[in-house]
Length: 365
Ligand SMILES: *Cc1c(COP(=O)(O)O)cnc(C)c1O
Figure 1 (cartoon, rainbow, N blue to C red):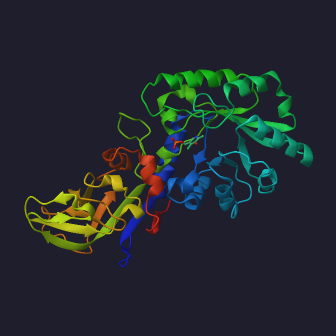
Figure 2 (cartoon, rainbow, N blue to C red; figure 1 turned 45 degrees about the horizontal axis):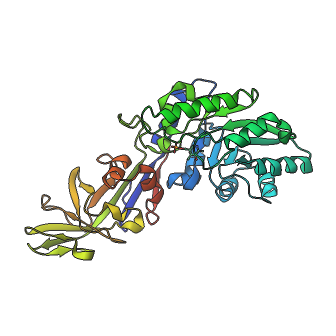
Figure 3 (cartoon, protein in one colour; figure 1 turned 30 degrees about the vertical axis):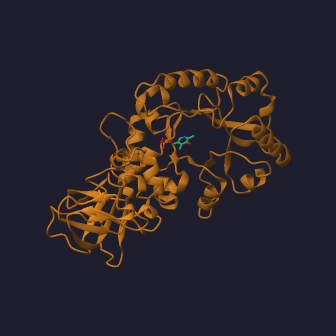
């Protein structure tokens, strides 16, 4: 790929790898099971428009976003691909959903009521997705609300319940007992909806048991190359790589300090590089003094505090490094899970924060 010489950073998104990851989900789920694309939060920071386009080309039958705004952005160039909004329905937003052919995931009896009223008003059987909470206590019908609905399904009159779903709390922890418990709770609810499709699994859920696949799986993180199998090798292809340039090389003297708060003091003369990377780029400040960047595959430790636009690294062992050279943050040498581990967060947080400032370069399918 062509180097854009005046750029300080390169965030590359490999849509080929993303497409391969999508095909991997298809290959490990049964034929009747569809694979949705979860593209909330601008497709975990990678660019919802491009990811949407890529997955549509692979006939992805269903997309999920978090907010109506995110859905409307996608609707600008697409009038009919199924898009559902996980955040649900605000009172009064029914018309906006209907007009734009977007489906709210109904998370409460109130939302069901509002959507059913809309169906009545418009004299249409409205496509409907219902979220049942099986342990998260975040969104979805509670146990009591679920029982009430199952006892009296008249609340669903006028609605075409196409999909019911629930969401795992602990699928990213190996054999966590709550996962099985949630699956049991969901299976009981599912019996009451013989004609609706069912969906339970996120990325880690998809890889933990075939019995969680049902009719539709909802991977997000793994699509973008994150590891859905904790404690095992990552079966996904790397999608994101990030490189930034060295701005300056410096020779710090023994006893000097570096960066804000002078948090690192040199025990010997040390060659350092200042690179065009900071917390404003999503390189979290909690990575200060902990993370490593890679010069041509060689690890270089971060020295002192990460600041807004700049980070310093030790390049004492790389005498030929010079301003303008590239160092890698994410890519072949370090994946998003490894980087997240160094500062006690998860790759999801790293991805969604990445590179507001860098131009995204897409490697097309
Ligand atoms: C974000 C989200 C997903 C995707 O989860 P990953 O762990 O990224 O695969 C699936 N379902 C719901 C309800 C979500 O909010």
